[in-house]
Amino acid sequence: MILWLLLIGCATDDDPCAYARDLIRSEEGLALTPDEHGVGWGNETCLQCHQTWNTHVQDCSRAVDFDLEAIREAADFEDPTTCVPCHGANGVAALEEVETDP
Image (cartoon, rainbow, N blue to C red; front, side, top):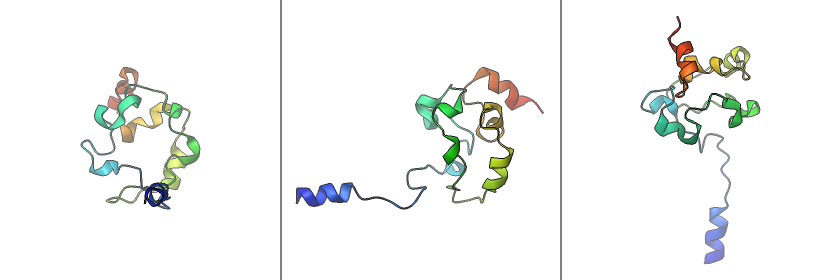
């Protein structure tokens, strides 16, 4: 019985969005909140946690279809200000200025 439980616990999920939250349905939509972003809140260097090879590769929202190719072409993953229009300032004062600029 224990072996069976261990094997079930190690099962893989082929769904690339199985562990991703659908930000569209969250409190602020795509904009991050302290509760959602946890230890990443206040960090202006997005690439410390998010790798370019898997960022905006899968559309894990269930309510809106995103043009991921256009997003990846427009984003400069080395520049956190490119994340601000969709995901907000992430609690970073310097990025809040970008968020409010027209």
